Length: 227
Image 1: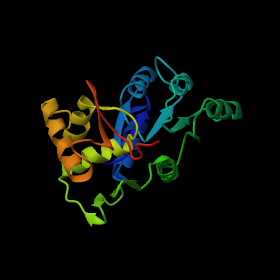
Image 2: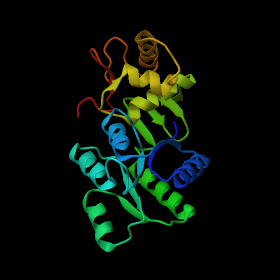
Image 3: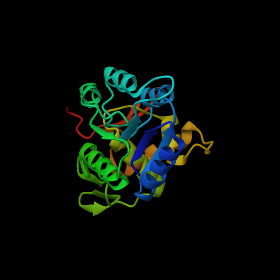
Image 4: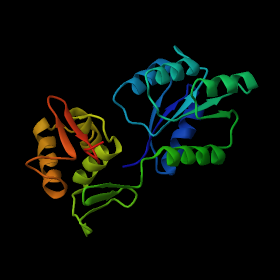
């Protein structure tokens, strides 16, 4: 699954340029043009690898967005992007919890390099192990007891989604949206069937230790049940 980046920018030309260049580098993007919309995305059940956040925005400025995001305990990395190049502005952004600060005008190649560095630094381990199974997230490979496990593309995407959000509840609605897409009108039973298949291949179906059911909500992946 591609890393998802939220781009928050009210200048249409800059927004479009960022979107195109990020997509050319293999990132999935979601774009909004005001601070209130950005905060709604970040407070919702969206899973972003990075946020590129302008400061001077309609409705809610970038400083307030990051203040509320950090206050809520969200640890998504944030790269502030602003024409405000004063030392006080940069210090304020970093003090509020930004991971980086880039001033406009900026060089696209440098910005993309910074994006890649932050995504790489905050990405989960490339190989996640549990019991006698392991998931190689970079090469999309799964093994059990050292032997390759054949998974369909949606089975793998579902497993990767759970692994990326280890320890957190992933609702059935989120699974349908992220694995099958917004245009798919399946039912919870579709998700349950795929979970059953993953458990049969990688877990203990009768008493799962790693792919756990959260009654009434969805599922949670736990690599080490004893922790």
